[in-house]
Amino acid sequence: MNIFVCAKQVPDTNEIKIDPVTNTLIRKGVPSILNTYDSFALEQALRLKDKNPDTKIVVISMGPSQAEAMLRDCLAVGADKAYLVTDRKFGGSDTLATSYILSSAIRAVAEKEGEPDLIMCGLQAIDGDTGQVGPELAEHLDLPQVTYAYTLELNDEGVKVLQEVDGGARNVQSSLPALVTFTKYGDEELRYPKIKDKLKAKKAEIGQITFADLENVIDPTKIGLKGSPTRVKKSYTPSVIKDGIIFEGMGAEEAANKLVEALIDKKLI
Image 1 (cartoon, rainbow, N blue to C red):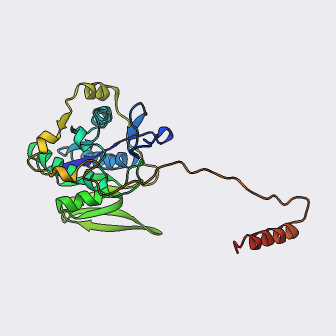
Image 2 (cartoon, helix red, strand yellow; image 1 turned 120 degrees about the vertical axis):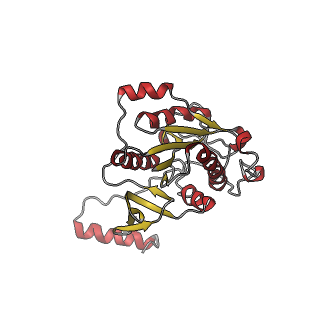
């Protein structure tokens, strides 16, 4: 079993800053973490490996060089290989451009590591919340996809996925190879690394894929800011205006009547 896990290093949501000119995230100097949803995907891959020790897990990330630290954390918990897709020409890519670049990178990694049986992604990134890269990646690679997955297990037909739906969950069967995006299931979290594995991960080689490695298979007009059809008009933190009325010194029935009158005056009911 060969599993590729797509992981993204994201800024800590408590420290996010926006460039007022480009309307893109300022990552320099901001603490970064492994995207939460991607950690759920990685944990599910590791559980498959627990049951099938011959499974190989390859983690792929697109981002700046500092994302190597996050990839080493992935290696420390049990991933076997890690690749960083990085180049200034990739900067500013929206979800469509990102998925296009990643699809080309995955094909390049597959030439070295073998074709993936499963590609596992987080449902969405906590710095964008679009939930688009995984499904777009499946389209670029012409793979069946299952989104909003809780867990999965292998069977004779391929893979059975427990998928979140409104009001509950359902089982979805898919052939392999396939792409699956994961959300959180119960209180499950990514396992903690052992000290010896953290030390080993610090010395591990992180493969790099740049524009030069893909220039023969990638269209430069479809990457970066210029190749991104999405345009962010404005990014800002909405102001919170607290304006309330407190009814005091009266009984519950009178207070309720006053509330209804106030809502009617403001044409809210």
